[in-house]
Image 1: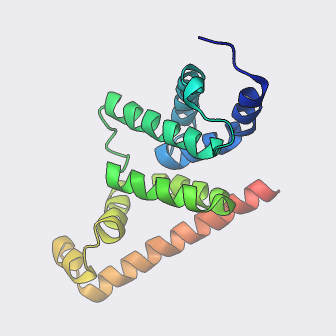
Image 2 (image 1 turned 90 degrees about the vertical axis):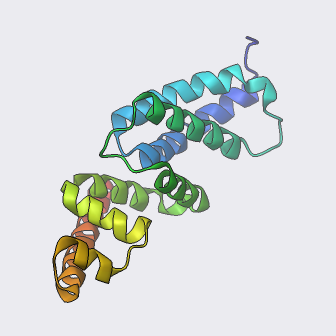
Length: 171
């Protein structure tokens, strides 16, 4: 392996925090994100010759981090608390689209992870899979109005959790 040039090292160093935040968004776990970031850095260094100077280093590095996160999830045989590849893609697309909202997305991911399993599954079924409220109510043996109230309470709890986490980071 050739020794990295100064520009590559500068870019890699400059992108560490953003790559870490991106991986936390994808994986929902700080420890897993650190492990995958280390693997990503190794891959980036091995593949540094394939990076063309003057192109978007961040896009190249995020793509590598994304594939490393997928490999990590496959190797781990997917923890049932993690979302599927489609939702991972959705989070990844959102993370790339707006770096300004990174803290809010990280807080959302963390707050989703803190929900009880049944609430997390309900949110996943409603917003990931697009199952109508009427169908969810029937599946859970509730009236439609009760299901709407349940979803509203979960959204409110997520909102409060996110705001609390954002306040912690600014303190």
